[in-house]
Image (tube, rainbow, N blue to C red; front, side, top):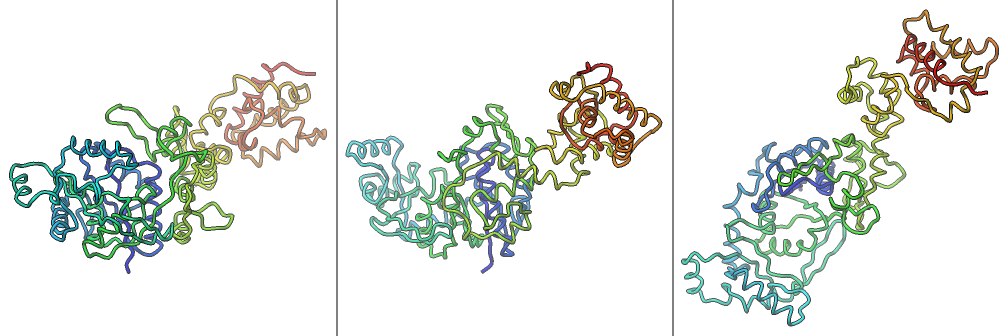
Length: 504
């Protein structure tokens, strides 16, 4: 069997991080089995359609490196890949279900539906539903004569098509994550399959699309697990072979209490969307992982391990590694706690291994002043193991562009003394005749100078760093000297020795 999977988001807003994880797992599974990953847009709910959401979905997947083999933009032999363009296909199967006695027309008005629910509540029914019992007290093609039904249709009365569920029957299917699932139809309701505007609901549309697109595995979020028995029945009623199902665990708040939401993320100060999203109605900006400075490969590595683990102690996996190791059987049943500090750790690891030349391009774009590429690469090289994001280099490396205006008070008290000042001035004299100096040469020059009277390096290095950066710690000091150059180093030593008061 050829593996074909789909990611089928609705364009009702920004793509949540949970959606990206679903897309990722589908993509990994498809690539592991030399299959196809399909992007399908499920826009049947036109009332909730949000302008810009569809292009946002495609941009987010592109940034994450999750490239569809088929889809709205990629094309393919199974299109259209947008449900609103497949409308006529759904009615045909809705009609088939009605003809086979597996579905029926329901003419109930919203007021009639509300009244039914109120009656059930008064009767202390815990979960009021339109089901095998209550449908017989409602206005539908099961309780009306064929003449009455035809008359209502002729009058243009709006109606929906509902599935006709058996009253007491077990629905069984095997979930590749959760094992066997058994649900009795007595707990289910007769879901609407076709709405009064002729558009299908998710339940009918996704079944028809999955069948016609020859989807082999449906990998989706846990929130769809309660709907799975209905979908299994629809496959049976339509005479189609059902795909394999795998329902993914929820992403939980950092404390594990409840599903991760935008509100929770906003409250805790971390992004929940892959890219920036501006609400078209409120104009509220929600920050994305990309704009916050996360590298896409670090983001993917972090996301992959939220609910799946290949085993072992290793944590760093490139996309090609994830593809090779991925399996549905190793997905956890329990929800995964979202840990933003872990996401930052992943970014730090990938930042360290990233090409300094590539990072320098981003660094230059963030600066508010011009800098040549060679210097930017050197700065990035010196800082990338000390920061979480490239943007952090702006503040961490400010001393590369301007001399310190203040000096770390603790270092001044402990390390700034006459011996240190004398040695800094002596080192400065050795640099005066040089136009440039590499870090190894700078190290040798300082060491040989201090060796002349056996001055310990520890008596001078903290003061030298203080003079050049104003800080007590930082990147390799000799790399700083190379980047600043001899002239700037001597100028900063002079400024510091003129400015900072001596300690005994």
